[in-house]
Length: 452
Image: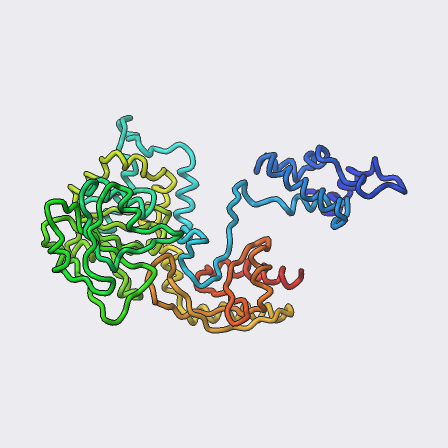
């Protein structure tokens, strides 16, 4: 193994031929071809690709030309600038206190799901029966796992996200027909996308009933007719209407003679005691829903995908519709979802059920160590949220490290990016969504900012 001293000697050798006593320091900067032959950078080129390494080399050279770096340190700087992977996506520590942060990719995958994805990255039997050598149903084991988790569903299907699940349902069941929906459920689902626009794009017509705050079963019944494709119930997800309100139950709508499609949004498959008002697939199906749609990357804690669960005849019609091919999931999603369904508790589930006393103990340990290093840190109570459109208005007791405001930007842009939140002029690092195994990395990131 090459020591640091040996690497510095090698770097010095790269520039020795041009280093006269009166040489312009810029002429001492190692050439690109020489740097690319340096063992660490040559190995990185094999792992990350030559363009990634060349970009790091050029950036290091530019810093040396600007006088911010000594020529003999260019190779070390280029190595330090290399990303961990060839992807532009940077892993971050989510210390925002939002468990399912959309900007951070929502649900983090479990270790079981990550291993399953890695195994599925090569050739797999995704559509092949190895025993007979003939074509098999795509994703059959993942679909079986989903069906096992929701026995109230006669059949299940998967698409690439929650919005796609609703689009497929509207296209297959209501193109050229009407979808009856409450005015209080005409929601915007994020990034400017609105449910009415999404549904109308499928060729369906919307029949709005009721008012923003009150819609009764009688309102739906009066609107149902020969042109009705289905009745749609939508969970409001990221907002709540309180006060003088009324909404129809699924049991009231199930007898209208048309399919009842329920978009529960956040992906709970069964009731969660901590979130008593959050709808789940099993309960909606037992209440009489014909079809339930949901997202896989929210409270289920899996990869991005859309779940369709319900009556066999409807699910079969959706799965054989031509649009289903365009919306199908890839083998990596299938692997991750199956491992999520059959594996140990997900990081999302662990964060949701985290013990506040355990969070306090972790925060106290981190604060004591950081204080010893001279960091202005305090342990404060915090309020976490589910996020991702789940459990609006629900807060989860949590604990956070409170740091000076300047830490927020510095932590986001550090070698190990940490995303917290600003509150009352302080940077809060909420621990509820931070797995305990990341405490050491969090500690190191804060120390790096302190020492910079």
